[in-house]
Length: 231
Image 1 (cartoon, helix red, strand yellow):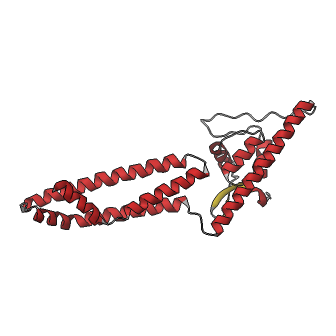
Image 2: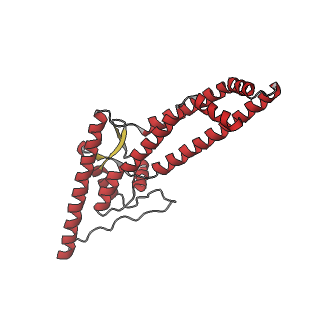
Image 3: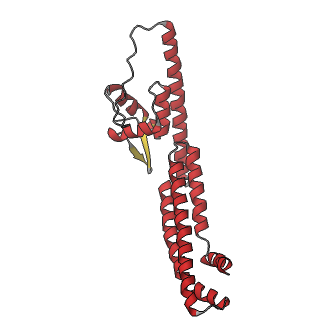
């Protein structure tokens, strides 16, 4: 059974492995762990055991990281008879790897503490909340169109037949605005999700939360903008 004390995020494990000489990116390690079922779940987060992954990769001489179907050659075995300078370099790598492992464990402990204090927000929950808000907001806007169109037509003293054109224009404007907003959310979500940086993940949550707050604005505000546009 793997040592539960060295559980860490995919990114932290990739950094620690790279420092130990097994250089690979977070994305490559994530695919590798998927392929060999090395991922675990701890308090709702995906983590891996550094020692388990390191041992697995050391024994897997034909490991394949799913990148265009290309096989990645294993790290050459160290020579049994090493020169003093080679030994010194190996000691430096071991010290660096130990330091990175210590940093990764501290980062994992900090995240665990923040989660216990309810200071973390799951990205999937934020995204799902935004999707629900968009649907609700769209429904509220379209439900408000008939009354808004009738009121606008009355204020502008337009014939009754013009009210239908106003409703159509309002619907087109709302669709265009919301569709553009949804595309912007999707693009930002994809852009920020592509980075393994914790800071970028926090930036992603903050950005999506701001967009969700904007969507909760009252429909009357947008009806006022419609009046300005068609008045």
